[in-house]
Image 1 (cartoon, rainbow, N blue to C red):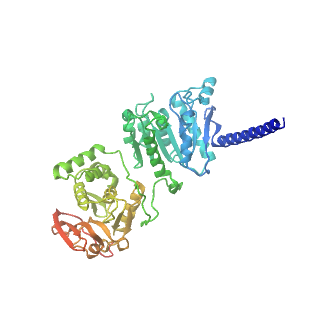
Image 2 (tube, rainbow, N blue to C red; image 1 turned 90 degrees about the vertical axis):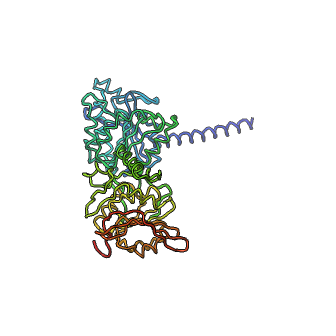
Image 3 (cartoon, helix red, strand yellow; image 1 turned 30 degrees about the vertical axis):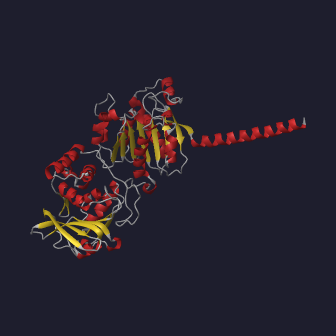
Length: 502
């Protein structure tokens, strides 16, 4: 009997211990998600799940569901966004239903009160969600996230509230509304904040015109190689291609809203200084744009067919780098013509073939360090980063250098090192260079550049006077430091300015 009582006492203690553990665990989980209510403009009470484990100044994502669904669409998505460093809130909209065993409480109230529940009626629920977050998390950046019809409405909401909205993610948007066949496209014309659009593969035509209407340079899109899925459900783990969507989402969010970009007054990626000595990460960024795709392909076909350049890596780089980002806005329609274009300050951006040809002569790989003389608008530097993150570029014209350094950072070319200085003198602090490319014409081969070229290195540059014939040269240095020169073709470049000229 004594042993039986002892066993009962131990069992009772064990049960109590397990109960305490379960209770504490339940309390911990409860803190990860709070269900809240706030009021829409017409007085309807809106329900939402709040996932906010981070400090109040953390970027805040507001999640809106697709048709016939509820905040349950984000039951597994929101915790992952928390782990990525974001606070978020999943909202029940009046135009909806139930999903993942989560009842749409806002929809049920609206039906009970006889309030309209069409798609556009849900816009006031979304507006009230933004006001709620702004009132509770005043110092946070606000990012809107929509799915299907709400993906369209977040674009409208961002247009109506440019001072409040810092970013948009739209999963399968389209002009779904009877009000106008271009209702969302017209709204897209006024979007200035960073925006990301994605969908199932076959849905691209639904949002293609909307995407092209967006004037912001900070617009991004993703289409899966698989068939994909409609709306935010594309991120659910049960779909084998969800990781591809997550990778694209993560890249966008961290580019614009990562820790080093959390200045409320500036949502763009900006550099710390004109000279940045930080070591690049192994996988450096390769910014992309979905604009002018056909013109880019035509440009590459022209280079391949008319000039016989067959280096597929170089041709791919020319197709991938958005040249229209590096010319004045009025010249963007001409960006992919095979011609130089003025960029201001009496400077030009070289014709695409020359950029491709000179890049081809360098024979770059990801471990090599390259020096560019004559940053210009930054286009050649951007092309070089397709091959290596170790790009150093010098520009003597100070206003141009500062504007271009800012542009490169804002566009995401964060590994490029920029400097204001005399190109004739190179950049001795970072020598030797495996490759040197000069995009303005000196009247002789600068000795300092020859000395800064590493053994086994290659340098391509135009040489000649302003009114004399210029020759594009390939300079190579062997392992013993011996120099070999090869004439490639006659060219015409702007002159390379020496000394302390500005």
